[in-house]
Image (cartoon, rainbow, N blue to C red; front, side):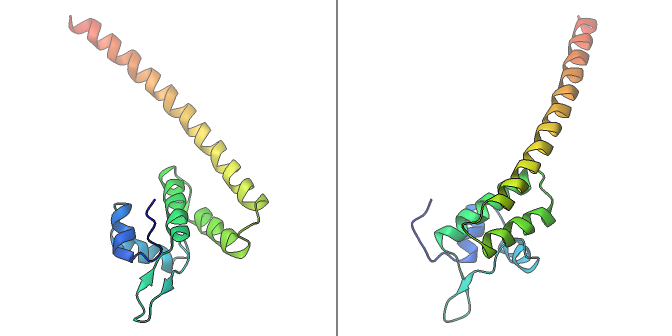
Length: 123
């Protein structure tokens, strides 16, 4: 992680392969917390902000709905040391991921059987 505690929206967006407008959109929707601003009004992100953004993007990659991510963000903002609600949210999401993984493994097994079948037929 960068040690820069005063990163611009462009630098943060580039770090995660996002367009700066995507970061701003997530902020407007309450999915990302509003960052601090410099004297000119430009967004500035601390290491803690960047870490939270990384967590939220990983949750999104795993299919967590944006409404749940926004809830997670609010929970962090309201009580940075409070864990039970965030823990419950993450456990529920983990169960959804495990169920999806099971579905994907089943689908992959079917595809593998079809590949084997077609490979035998083509020789």
